[in-house]
Image (cartoon, rainbow over all chains, first blue to last red; front, side, top):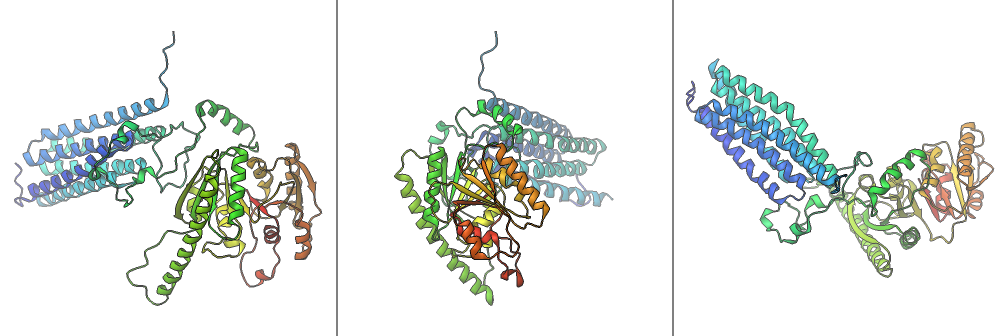
Length: 103
Length: 448
């Protein structure tokens, strides 16, 4: 646990930020459920990935484990790859009609 | 030093969290996928970056700060890439552009699927609390964009269409969508009838739009002070009059359309100022509007008309109808020195209207060689496309209004670039304007 010169400032700030980010989960989840297009859902998933990065960083502060910052880094990496994969999937699914493989 | 870093870290943590929360609200509340993506990409990346940086500073060891810096750099590098890929995919998948979009710069560049919600998903009644919509009518605002009209088998025609477009810009395109403005006024029945005739003749889709020319209501403040009260009162009265006219015209339109089962038609009501609305409805090939209908539901000067405002936006050619025409055999084209006069012939050819009619070109102002050359060029273009062209003797600068009216009275339609050339001012109101006389005299006016 980080104990700074001003006691309780950083845990308080981290807790408040966690509250804000946690409240932010709700509208994103609603958008994820409501859609209406799959692009909306992909965007909401991307945003949830960013929120996951934020949570990992906040856990690093609150629990005092610097290793959680590495987890935040990894989550950001996975989120980027997820977004790219969703984009490719959407584009491919909407563009090419199912074709018979050439002989 | 340590205290300053702690305070900075706390500020970064709380500020980052707040920005992420704003981004989340934006993802839920904005009206189309592109705007939502913009909230998630920019605000989300900035909030997460600040928060991770704050976390690194709060822990305070060199390794934590370095890891946090690396994570921030990574987020800043990848967020634009991810959002670009997602936006492109959303466009290709046919996600609707929201009502705030004014133009579709990618139309024709990228292939675009027609947006279609899975019917199995929408058939299930959705609980009201899951809908992030705040629209009291219960309509999802993301669904209110105009769906793009496509012919069946459009993908096969697409390549041929673009090739043809590149080959000759003046080739007549088939009219596929006609917008009929229902704004009221004495010429509205004639305009509606003309639009229906055109749509039946061309097999086009007809959209009746009421409320054109009406700006959305603005917030005036809690109490109107002084003249503001009366301004609001007058605005409310003109709005009520305009809505009543629009309702009458809409009912007449729906009755007329219901009597013709073969016609593909729909009616809408939108209130926006003409320029924004014209840009919103860019998919239409022709806009039919009645003559003499002003933005306040009263007759007004040609410069103030809804038709003039829509034509000035230069999105679609405007056909202004004063009386219902018979067969159009004689068309007069007014070529002056103003903007857009050089494109009149190309606009007439591209619109595909009146292919059998004889076009008479009337140049305004003999003494200007540029106008003369422009008129000759347009005649050559029309002749090259097989139209019959007659050059009229040019109009003298000191012409008389009755004489011009008598000359124009034999034509069924007029093609010109604007409804008036008056700029305003005291002495300008004394001038006789050839465009205004032609607009009053000819039953049809095409403003390409």
